[in-house]
Image (cartoon, rainbow, N blue to C red; front, side, top):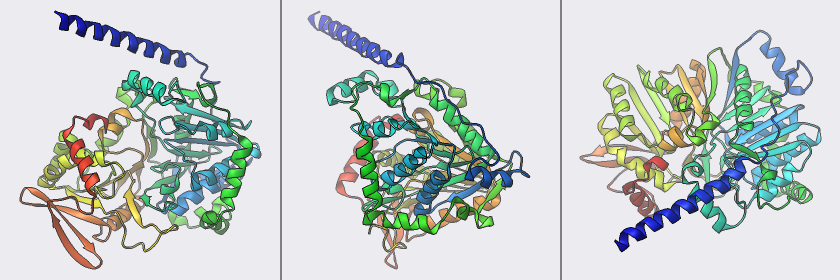
Length: 518
């Protein structure tokens, strides 16, 4: 009896505390969300980007043009150059924007644009902002820049308070905005897998990501802008300045930091690259790089996914039918790959129909999230038995002797697939439960054989034995084959090149009921 009373008392106390937490967070939801704002109207020749895009679009009403950005240094340059060319607006939406070398260099470009009178709207997910509000508040204090955050925490400071809030909001706090888009003047949009930070632009001295973006013109830009506006004005988003517990940013200090960074020796490769490309027009100088099609669509989950609403409109339901429509070939790249039993069955069905199914993901040694690899490893043998060709990126790239900062460490971050060499996808969507059910995601579906060939060629390069392990079956266990310094090797029974710590994390994660959160 005493035990029962204790259990009931504990339950009542926990309920009261939870209700208090929910009430406290509800106060945040009732705070001013900021005035609604929308994409600014287009013009024919008001800005350099108008004058670049409008003539190309005159004869292509309803069409979109895409340029694939695979090189990390070019991906940096295209963002900086579009910011320099912008004369009306910059709408920027990212899972995170780091205040490291390249993050500060690109922040400097948007501040200079704002100084010229360009309206800047910066929308960031809140999960990575802890302790960094000051830098973003410094940006927000510029009269032409506004910073808003997706699914924010009420408590900006204090580990204990923030921890309690995460507990009380266990359901909603795991739901994040994983979108990535950079839109200039409503004329050009960059959509893909890259966040803003050194690892995405070959500036890291440890590991640099392999990733893809698409630079878009035409109707696809309007679609991306509509997605941005929907998020910007949604109930899930709050202006950073209305949140509790932040400290005032220091605009002068941030400017000094940005300028000193731009003048540093470390920034030289990026500054030189921008000097080489005098304008955004240089990116379109090779006509074969720009792929035009009427069948291009920018798609995204709705912001209501953060509350579990909008299920019928989730991105997964828009893109996976394209995957399963394959009749000849499927090349799928996903750094975090957890297909689940249903996914394994669907890939197996494709193979039985005669489809060549190839999947590239990270090896345990290359991934930046060992726990995800632990969940993926449960499906490795079933996938191989089903006839799926499986490749895992190695932690270094022997083709690349040195990067800009001395590291050839590699980790896969590309999220893409090509179906039958005719249609494809590039975006932020991983084939894992988090992208399917928890995060909001975004990407571009395209139907264009030449663009598909470009993406497929990158896939082919990355699955070469100098860059990736080919996984096969040796009886009932996996085996890894690669080319190591010109010699082929075959490894059995263990995750190659992975540290003991990574193996331990992956093993534990693979045995815990965490898959739905990964």
